[in-house]
Length: 491
Image (tube, rainbow, N blue to C red; front, side, top):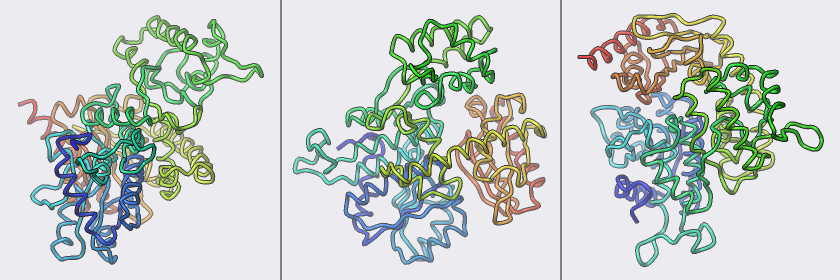
């Protein structure tokens, strides 16, 4: 079996063999959408393989968290969506015989140390920020955990009519994780992710198509869909409820149902969607929106075939947002339950958390707009203290990029107080900055460790935790490192 990502197949098989040899496994995962889908994929694969396991979640895999894991009586620990950046810490406990790690991650690995069972696309020439997510790495491992038939190949779900010997249905969660990790920034999933999409389509769990690329196609009433479509801002419609309603009213499209209620995008026929999309593009052109931005209005979209139409779970972007609204509010159990297929109490709870999440994000972005950012030589930053929850301050920072609240061309750093009395740092850049030499993973790791903290992540987005009172020293060091990175590239 070549697997969905041939470059990782051989090493994934070795990692799977190590898990099969374990009497039981502790599965430790991150708390964002990518982490939750990683845990959903891994736990389902372990259960199908008959491997006993327990699942735990960590906001930050730092030295204290690894120590807590080492204190358990598990001999084998599977880390998903983190572990690579903390490999130097993990390796110390491995060397002491506390546990054997198996890692399925996509973040920048710590330098100068390695372990036998480390499944990371960066180790095999693939980009972990744009080609394969943590959920993708977990999916590759899940495929390797399948039992082989006599001819050495796993039977497909279409052949067996069930999940027996086939984990390709888990591609749906892998696609959700990749989109939740913003790996579709350029309009579609590429590289190794594309192979997973193909397997999802083959398994009948993913549909890939071309449609309006606006968040909320499944659940939002049309006026709200257009009003909140701020990725491509259209004057007179974006952030303008009255303007959105006026635009829809003037169309030759029945935008209300028989009861007079506004329809959703998913309620329209194919011809009606085409008419609305064409009118929206004409409006954008007439309003002077740049052609490159107009092109972003329509593109590749992914829906989950087996989920109910008109729900958050049908569209991968809405699914990932729903998951973010659970673990970031200390309810990882709810998000994992939804990933595992629970659609009653867990889904209801997730939806309530989502409503609160949206309110907090809106309030957080408004706070940044009102208070502004401070600009250094090579970066900009804001310190929200306890005004923005530390588990969502990175999302707020990402939302602020490209608005009037921030300056273009330099990364944004966001600070928020943690419940443990420390400070969480989240950083966001752009792929243009990365091409110019920016590596926020290195910035967060080096600057945080210089003040007694720790961090890591991707070149385009990363995070750290630092001691209280070290913000200014951290900023000075981070500003210096960013300046060196960009100066080296210009040379």
